[in-house]
Length: 217
Ligand code: TMP
Image: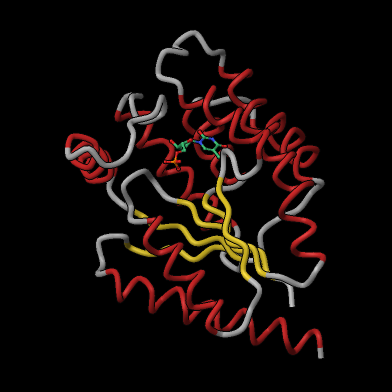
């Protein structure tokens, strides 16, 4: 049974830990799980990721930025995600199109309709079944990321260096998108313990797997 799960959240929200716990959990249930991430996840996508994350690329135009994220996504969907879903597998993706709406739409305030058109084209209109958003106060997220970076863990990318106001708009954007589509989104307080966050994710996945297997049977 195919299932497409995406994780979103501000930088420093504990996303990576929850993603690997979730993938492990689904694997233990016997699903064929593919773990991937954006930008990147394919050979071409990883090359695009390097350009996007290069902190010296300060002159990058926001339109070029959105097209690069979308180019990486188009490659990932066509080469990796769709074939795995078509073979009946589960895909867990670290960020997906909602990052573009949050960062380039709400954050950079690019035209939303243009972003929707570009995204539908890049993704062949593929949408996630579930999107898990790990919500964290902006200052806390940035603080966690800066401390990790000074301890030699994790990179500070071009987006991390943007103003706090930008990250506030991104967070409000995520919350607004989640409110608009509650059947797809699960919003979790990222300050909760790792175990509690994982529990909430498993509960929601259980419901979704139940719904999907009923539909298949
Ligand atoms: P990460 O690897 O730490 O998740 O960093 C990816 C960064 O790229 C993060 O700051 C969010 C940003 N991003 C966008 O601005 N738009 C997008 O479409 C995607 C996928 C990521």
